[in-house]
Figure 1 (cartoon, helix red, strand yellow):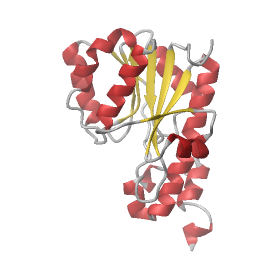
Figure 2 (figure 1 turned 90 degrees about the vertical axis):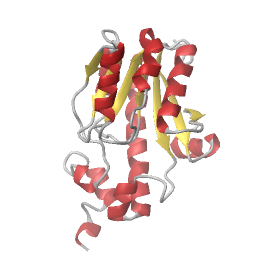
Figure 3 (figure 1 turned 60 degrees about the horizontal axis):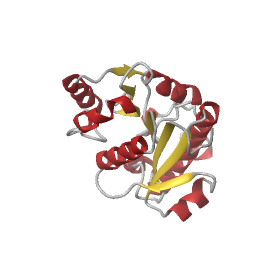
Length: 225
């Protein structure tokens, strides 16, 4: 199956790592330059996991980018990826448009992920897709009350406006609001395991992610300087 013919779409949302434009809470702790380097490292790590999962499943990866042109993004993350500008509006508007576009392009299972959760392994991503065979929405719950993965079955595409209505994206109330919306419209949700998004130094496990601990200064010479 060719990439464009795939009925499994993996939508990877990310922002170009310009210092001051990414990881604001982390930047308050370690400075904008180092926070941007952490975002860069996480984006590469998470996209590699997405690529590995997609190859195993025959899925199509689309990188939804903001803060840079597709040409600049290709220089950053690799020219072999398909880059799509996220467009205007809030995050909810941008995710909604991307999901609708994938459904119109023939996708049957769609998973949205970002670059904030290094716990997202290829196996976990594949599990998110698999849940959509039995439910309408797959959700990867984050410890902070948000979610690190959102999956939608095309069979539930008509419920998307109700699912997305008034979601407080980027807050600790996002997951609870989505669950209420799903209950209200009768959408069936299945959950993946609970994991941390990386928003502050306290979220980083230096044993599990030594590369991230190093780039943020939690370990290494700068940690004791």
